[in-house]
Amino acid sequence: MAIMTTILLLTLSNIFMTFAWYGHLKYRQVPLFKVIVISWLIAFLEYCFQVPANRIGSYEFTAVQLKTIQEVISLTVFSVFAVLYLGEKLKWNYPVGFGLIVSAVFVIFKKW
Figure 1 (tube, rainbow, N blue to C red):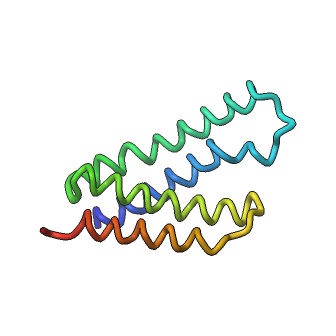
Figure 2 (figure 1 turned 90 degrees about the vertical axis):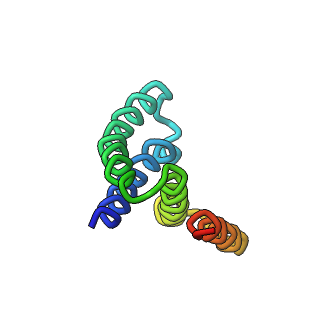
């Protein structure tokens, strides 16, 4: 249960952080100061999920494993965000790069 809770909270935190960091790219006409304030407010919500995720996850995973999980989730969330929200095209090299990242996950989680 703690593993799924950690993954769910990390996913939610990454959704908020992706919008905080990149959501404003659709609204380039909005003054930078306003974008920064709004991004900070969204990032606060991100921390409300990220901190408990890491605390709960630390009982099941090492810090390196937690960071690896977070990065995979982050790239997955960002890929969906870039295509659906920003309207970017998914290029062939993106899944290839993600495949290489998955191989890194294997290396980190393998019991050597």
